[in-house]
Length: 74
Image 1 (cartoon, rainbow, N blue to C red):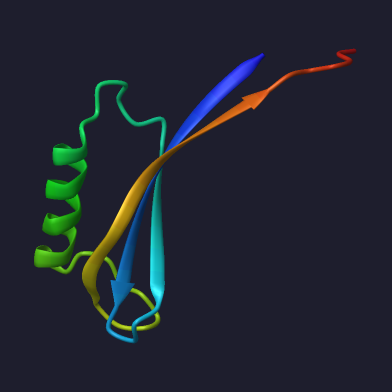
Image 2 (image 1 turned 120 degrees about the vertical axis):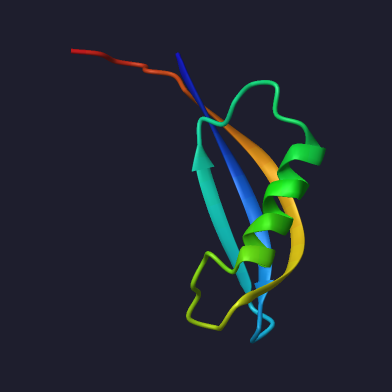
């Protein structure tokens, strides 16, 4: 079985559309405070371009874990 983790940071852009930034394999001891600070910095520094304009608001963040179980391996 293999497991992977992805941090998904969700923002609103200037057109009020959701934009999700995914980070593969974030560190294990990541805190919500660290994520929120990083997201605020992304907005403040305006470092991400989206087709709907600048990112303007944090919507949320989540950690997604995916497990793959191989049933048949050749």
